[in-house]
Length: 279
Image (cartoon, rainbow, N blue to C red; front, side):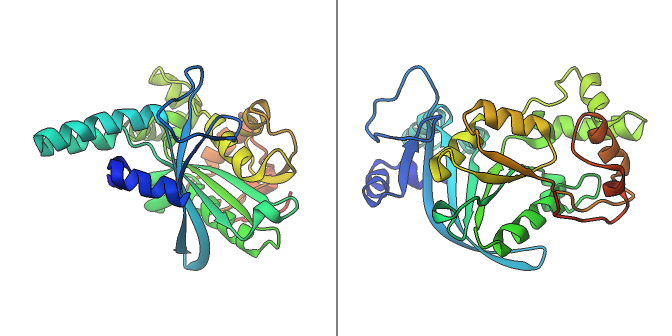
């Protein structure tokens, strides 16, 4: 995790074109030390060849890791302290600032017309543990399958700081206990005094703008907030494709709450074990 913090390695990566930065419009910026003071900046590492096997299905992707410069500045400050003191106790503090998002490029969407795009909020319980309390893991797997099979290819933007619609894993665990006591997923957030959805999709928009520009693409989502946020950030040529997967008896109430909150989930889609990629 420290390779790009070392100045010598940083210079090598910049020279090879595998460490670069963009602004919120997706435009490339200089890699000198000066940064715009009026907005955030994203640093990217990649492309990195990444053979994958998700839910048993193999995929080949080009991986880019993305981190905002504000977070990177904190990491570099702590890394300098580590080098001076050798303090192992700082590693946990260092990791706490590493909210690194990812872009997975599949096929050649840059040269394709109307590629598929999935902006996926990370979900440890669903994506990693395989929890059926939500449909996140199957949605990620289906997105990879659909993009890999599509002639136009596409990309997955994986948002690392979005656990529990932005409240974090600890608070998410508390909401699960509240849900087990009878509240739905949105009521549980409100009971904790937290927003029902505090996710910020502006960084996802900047990454899409960088790789695809503002040209037509098909967004795999059921969430109108995500569509609105991406459009507000400058992506004006989105066509939406419904993306339903992993529906089971364990998450029908969860999906019903999402439907009541405006998600594009029809009654027929919420039958157990349904999965469809149709719009």
